[in-house]
Amino acid sequence: MPTPTSVAASPLVAPPVAAGGPAPTEVGGRTYQVRTFGCQMNVHDSERIEGMLEAAGYRRAASDTQADLVVFNTCAVRENADNRLYGNLGQLLPAKKRTPGMQIAVGGCLAQKDRATIVDRAPWVDVVFGTHNLHRLPVLLERARHNAEAQVEIAEALEVFPSALPARRASFHSGWVSISVGCDNTCTFCIVPSLRGKERDRPPGDVLAEVEALVADGVSEITLLGQNVNSYGRGMDDPGAFAKLLRACGHIDGLERVRFTSPHPRDFTDDVIAAMAETPNVCPQLHMPLQSGSDDVLRRMRRSYRQDRYLGIIERVRAAMPDAAITTDIIVGFPGETESDFAATLEVVRRARFAGAFTFQYSPRPGTPAATMDNPVPPAVVAERYQRLVALQEEISWAGNRDQVGRTVDVVVTEGEGRKDAATGRVSGRARDGRLVHLRTGGPAAVGVAADQSGAGDQTGATAGVPRIRPGDVVEVVITRGAPHHLIADGLPRAHRPTRAGDRWEAARSTPPSAPGVDLGMPARLPVGPPPGADVPAAPDVPGAPATVPPAAPVSAI
Image (cartoon, rainbow, N blue to C red; front, side, top):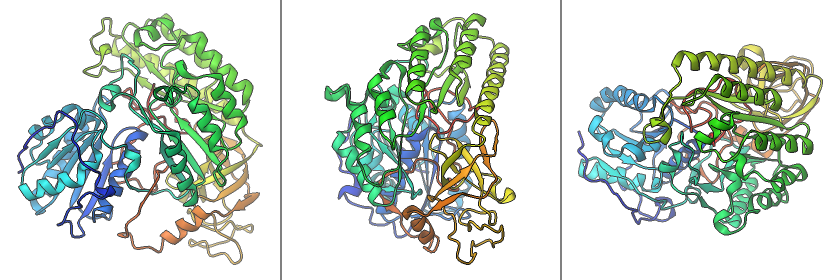
């Protein structure tokens, strides 16, 4: 087994491999698999990791084969993050023993936190890298292979902005665009700032250039990504930079949908609301983390807003965009939470009428101030409150979705979001407000099938004269039923608009799976068939699982 050589405790100076640095000389068609745990930022980083590996000569492994390289991109937020990682590493040990030359790498937030401890606990790991030095992975893999020693390299500050790295985009119609990394907030429950570092903004020209490049490549929807998007510009002495960025996106021809995640109530200003309402391609969707409706709990969380301010934001958003779908994050059972505090949370939920909520039972994360607070809430009490919150939010979500019945909506077809599509004869996609829609095509039960007005068709979508509906295409439908977590459109589509993204998806189906897919930009949702082992919970700031799935998962519960 490899043995660790050193841990870097200071930033390392090295160019990214994809930007002209030396590529490994002995890769020779080796295959890789990336397993992602955590938030959308980790999904973004995993796409960059895949892009770097393919630029260095690796090929993505088929799902039914053992990869020569397995990379874990980890999360440190959820309570069982450590157990989940080491359980997966243990499962790989037999494969490592019987596969000469196989390598295992661990990156992400847990790697940034635990460093060489990972190799101590799992000495068959070859490379450990952190959140600030993704670009070093190909070099570290080659060094570990050459030296037959584990390489542990952690930087203390960002060396290369991830958006400067190549990416393997798996979605042709949507893309992540990172506008900042890191976080300057000090929420007492959150470990993310200590692992992702201080906030660092990208220049708006760089952001817009990436958006334009994505649109030129057929992307019609982008999601602006950051731990706290509406503090964007603070480091550039331009507090209105985020609103300006939204408006600038409105001038990009071919860009049909703009989303962002996640904002912070403290920094959410009226100029952003105006920009959302007045920019046609900005979607009527907002994820606004609440965490608690109690002012006392918010104070202990070190959240710099109170109930009145939060509800004021919701009211102003709805006044400007009456049909906006607003989602949130809520923690139940924070230390010291009383029944009165919890009742305040329920009251905010009733008044805000969220379209959906990511709800969490609090559990302490080592290294956070909240982990040492007095007056923990008994687990049985937390569980009972959690169930009451879930029941209330499900009722509200269902009522809101029933209100959608009879409305005509444009749906961008996606892959992987309708687990029962094959059985129900539907395809799935997202409306402009982010709601998940399962829709009938009039053809067979698979994405890529024909929209057949007669209801006939075959499994390839080869209905004469009818263009088939593909991921990325836009379909106009009438909502016929609302469920708590999704909408149904069982009438035949009223219109179908093929897109360049659909063309590219169709062309890719005839491309061998091993063909490289290096490109710029990121998918806005999980690709079809996420890599084996992928685990992408909604919000990384707090452990738990979403009770009511909102339209799009937030970057963090800030």
